[in-house]
Image (tube, rainbow, N blue to C red; front, side):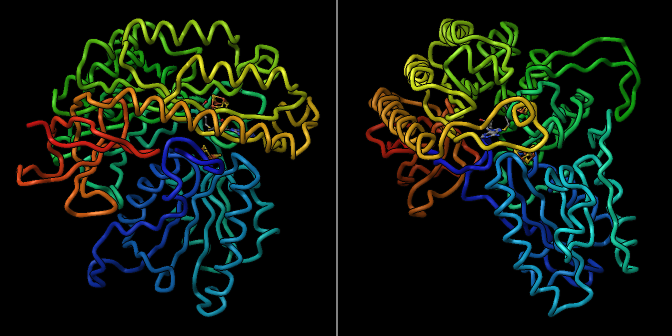
Length: 482
Ligand code: SAH
Ligand code: SF4
Ligand code: F3S
């Protein structure tokens, strides 16, 4: 089960603030060392890999140990107040490090940098650089500026930056699964959400550069790519000018469904996943493409946010309760064994008890395998902050959230029980957390499966058929099919 305070949904809470160590610590190879911590959604973790690549060409090697770094970077998240508090707390800890090491530079990247801009330099006196998500190419120049003692800021948002030509340095990767960013920004303007302000306008990355990156990963032994974006289903790229690729301009438009197919065709042994889907944009074309290719995983993260039409309208989600339920029906009709997960916000402005019940019943209807569940946190500058009153008392929000979490726990358990006795194709990602005598992998539905290695001679990156014999809250247990 995923817990309450995830700062975002696409990755695991245990990775919040994770330090990356991409390069061997060979002092003869790199002039200087940087240390980076990432917070928030998978997009931020993916951006840190782009930042690592940019710094690498400038002679910076990474270190896991902040104390030996010349440059400390925090890639930050603004999605909820709690996410920002975590970062501020962490920054005060770096104040000490800076006192002990006067030349140390501290930079804030990502969504908080974008939201607070130069204000950050006044509020957090120790910060030397503030760099927004579309400005990472300017990092080398900003570092140079900061080295002369000036504080530097670049928070310009772009209409076309996709970092298409930058090959990310895979940090702390298991060597099997990787994230590939396919678009940036968001045009949706959900009233509660800060992302359109911190990430700017939506833009799609050159399709051929995406396929080339996925192909390269596959050639290097990776077996799974997850196509990433705030709203992947609205991916739309027109082959007008041959920018980052050698392809000719054809004027062809590439939709998300087509892109999925292009990546799936790289090899039947390369699994394809994607995240996140906005319910309004996931088309029949996408669903039928998923159904057509065995290697496109049968799993959709389809955040509902609320089960009540009035609240959905206030949230500016552009669908109704009935419309969402029909989308669930359509998914199950096209792919009966498709896993579905969700994000839920409870206690949004003016939400009544009855409307809260609608959220519980839509969760039950959708039979989510898993959900990320949050109580509403007002974000300055958003539509909701300007228009509506955050009037649901905190105790009520917490109680409703507990009801939502309890329901999801039951739904997850029931979903696991339905898997008992079934056999799934599992991609081995590595040793299980608990024991190196067990493998850990995932099935197509994105469920984690743990099973004894035995003497079958499989290795990381292999596909293996596993029969489920039991489960814990978050994991299926099984054995290799004889
Ligand atoms: N683009 C993704 C969402 C990214 S943010 C999508 O549309 O699915 C991840 C989740 O954080 C959202 O789905 C929402 O459930 C939650 N969230 C966003 N803003 C929030 C806020 N102000 N308070 C509480 N939760 C919020
Ligand atoms: Fe935020 Fe909505 Fe865009 Fe998701 S789709 S990032 S919730 S504005
Ligand atoms: Fe957070 Fe920014 Fe992602 S606000 S959830 S890091 S897009």
